[in-house]
Figure (tube, one colour):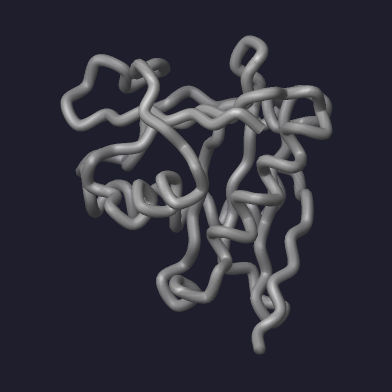
Length: 152
């Protein structure tokens, strides 16, 4: 059995940046361009206004994701699992840790934007109890944008 460990790290740490670069490359292969043009600042992921987490499988960093404040809600950003670690429960474990972090910092709902070319992510969010909400954020008016939310 593989051990999944989740650790909070600074958004601008080298390990987080390597995983974020992989995230954006994955999104670019699906959508083109740089993958995601959403404005993000590392300071948005500093508690209590947000947090960024890295998942390690057998000690190796294989996933990331974080939340930042979006009004009274928490917005999920940069959720990613490396291809070689998919299907091992990393994303599910990471999502639960992100939800727990947001809840511990007083957030009652987690919201997210996702594109329609990410069927694995959509399946994960639906299985975790997320429901469609009105589109919001940077890509709200873009074709293929899907927004989800879940009460924590």
